[in-house]
Image (cartoon, rainbow over all chains, first blue to last red; front, side, top):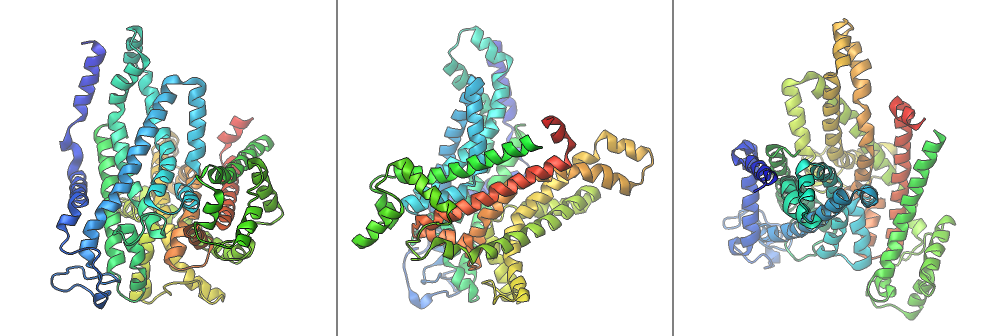
Length: 285
Length: 314
């Protein structure tokens, strides 16, 4: 085992001390675990059919057996919130996965090749970064029809340069390090050095960024669903529910809008805090 | 200054052209006949199809198509709305001032409250600092489409201080009353962001050597603060102005939707849902032009306020 490889291992070990998360970090992690559990098993947890309509119970408040009451069509609100977790997180998951892979690949190419490749990619990042993702999503929804897939693709185009920009700077520093030069002298292929040695060292940064990004993604996709440009009713989804409850809110029954909104904000805060704490713990702010 | 301004304007022009071009490329690349996209798959009359083909020059080659649209824009012809059955310029006209009022009042709130809270937090420190920053962090995580409804519920429905929705009957006092809640909703996130940036930047300046020098020379704290700390500490706010403006412009879509305000943002969303390309294209164009112009304005301000930028140019 070469000195450089030992150095790589030592650095990775030093970074993984979960006790440094702090109380708030652990709290955020707990919230996320609960949300992910609900997203996975929401249908089994829901006490009622989330799509069972009973107009007689339209906007009726909490009664025994229905702790959050009913929505505008008399559907059980708690069941819809539980089932809606999946649709509210699947989009962000796809968005974060796609843009993390794309952003990391582009940033690594820019940092490794340098020169005009780097200049071109960086300029591309800067231009694309300035264009608001929501506006792009609105444009694409007009052209291809509203839906979660279109919203995810549009926001991927906006998130990728944002991550690429951040990661490029870190990757430039990493590829300039001694161990990289050592591997080059040893005749390792470019691909092997980047994928087996540079990328693992960047993983803490990438993971922390992806988690922070997940928080933004939840709000952006929830917002698009609120506008009617993401998930489409009657699918239970928190963003859709914020909009669906608006007429009732104006008539003095705010439960659906505020409950769904609280879930979205809670998720966004938890991801933001956890990503922030992890970045600080790993020293990759 | 001239070359600096020239370069900025050129970059702005490229951004505007690229955005409009993007829409046309997307329409061109869209699978199937673009006419299906334009009619949004709804059944329509042969005359209507013919009119749409002519309006978007669909029988012309790609570049001709783009330039005839662009030429139309320069002559004030933004096309016909499929969904509203009206001239796009007639749809937009009355909505522009509404959105301008909303963005303007939100901007004033962001600057007044964001800056002052950030400065107070940085200079006072202690409990005030912690409390302000914790509140700001929490507020910046609440999106406008949620905060709007919380504000409506508390300040319009429970307390009855302000009207819940709409923009009022047009008299100045009524308009102002209607503007308060949507402006706050639009300003909250960005205001919290400004407060945090201000605090961090003023804090950095407070720790600088020249501030310590000024203090030990016996210059009154008030003067040290105003001349040495704030002057430098407030400059970075300009550098986040671009992000801030983009956020405000996009934010109008959510806030106008929540408060049922007939502005450009709501028009954009309604048109997008109906796949009314002419309207979406025109509103996007206006928003991007506004964004580019404001960014150029920010760059000019920076040039005047920060001598370092000027010396780099020379």
